[in-house]
Amino acid sequence: MSMFLTGPLSMFAMLMTYSDDGSSSRRWVTPLVLFSLPLLFASLALRLALPALKGSPRTSGNWTAAAVALCISGLVFALALGPALDNMGLF
Image 1 (tube, rainbow, N blue to C red):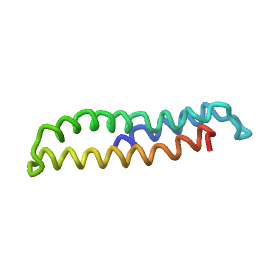
Image 2 (image 1 turned 135 degrees about the vertical axis):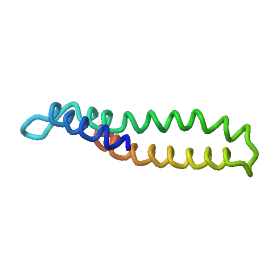
Image 3 (image 1 turned 180 degrees about the vertical axis):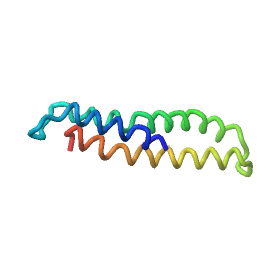
């Protein structure tokens, strides 16, 4: 859901930072805007899931929800890392 919110903002950031010939020294702005909100939610999920994993027994619903939240936040991080590094020119 948060990608739908940041998508139009990242398109606007791309329009504002890229010149007409297509080259830009600020290639990092678009992935920063696009993935800022999803990575914020992923870091909040990590912050809330780790204490739930430590304090709950494995058979409880809290433990299962925390494990799912960690899997989803890891997936969001992995999906965000590739395009972000590509647009920053590191690879």
